[in-house]
Length: 323
Image (cartoon, rainbow, N blue to C red; front, side, top):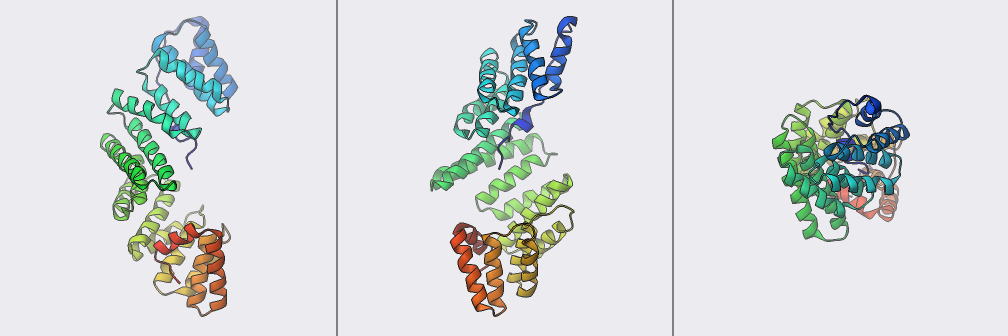
């Protein structure tokens, strides 16, 4: 879900350079990451080859070139530049954060933790470093849970909560840390705490796409803990956006079923299939059909849904939708 997770967060790197006239343009284009990927690589390569940048400045140039190589899928060259940037300046936190993001994007989150631990050690008040490490803990938690390593998964989720909490302390006006922590809290089954964080996000008025996502997530969390009126309001509000997906319709159908309104639930499920029909929608439709007296149709839907994705069906059962 989050393949380029850190790159979008960490591409902006501050750089102050002397103004030698003969190579100023290349250095400026390198710092600003202007132009196409090939043009950015060319600018940074010229700055690096000029011999006019050393130490931290050279590390920055290498880091920016590595980011451009990464975006152009030239991964071996990117990693070589990240490695060299950190070798030149081991205290340059941005290079460590970007290399950590590189490893995560390549499906190697374990390799990112050393860089993230060092980044936090170097700059314990860096909210981005805290969020990046929290996210990596979360990814490792997903992986451990999928392998049935519940204790390890819980340890990683708790590590993510610690880091997100610090990110919130360091940048309390931002909704980013609250969002990350809310998702981690849901993974730990702490849905009421997640709802509290979603509330904090909405107070901070994020853009409409994030507002939509938060309302849908809060709807689902409210459904999970039986706050049906909150959940119904959120999913209904989410349906008012010009961009929607199947989730608010699916969750609202589940709410309506729990409130005894199977007919309205069927209408929402029918509407959700315009966006995406999966095992969860089929299961909810089957339960609604049973409630409406269509035993054959309901049992057929439920059986097909369980055969298609039993784990997805169990999630709907956990949300209170049962035959």
